[in-house]
Image 1 (cartoon, rainbow, N blue to C red):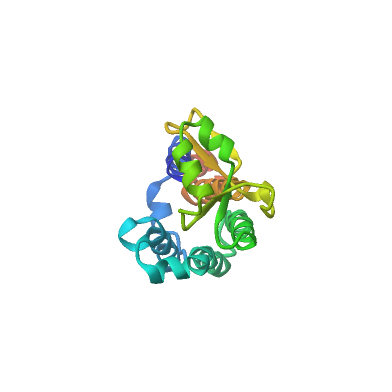
Image 2: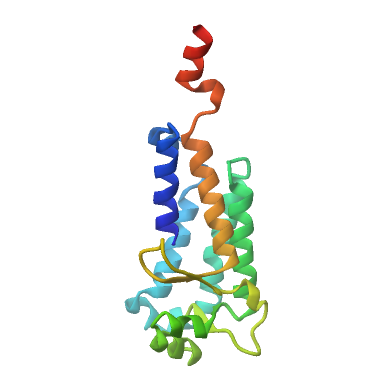
Length: 194
């Protein structure tokens, strides 16, 4: 989902006269925290790591730690465009994950409807280190992966309200960073000179 949101955001910003170099040179502080968070998530999904007993034992703490790293990063960058949306999205995901033993609850019916019944069964059996199926004992189920992404998404996907907030934050960050304010645009200055 996030890849397509990022691509669409950059494409729209370019159509609005934005410049990619403005995004590349934006002074985003402690960006290494984002890479560290993705690194933790990678460890939680790669079989070469998920088979290791220490990783399995630490999973209820490792997975939420990735979201904590992102929260710290967005706190350092709280004045960046879209930072409040990004932080709220991460916090929403973190809350539901912590409330459910370190796993993100997923709508099992949606998984089956999208053609992933084996994934639903694996989540329900507790085989995933990061996901579980929404059931009677699920806490804050409305913050779980309950939305189904269909076209324009090229691949079917399921996402949470927190993911939606993250997408909004990423969109705002890209638009307000790549596209210069009206007073700074060359066409505005040309109009003033005329």
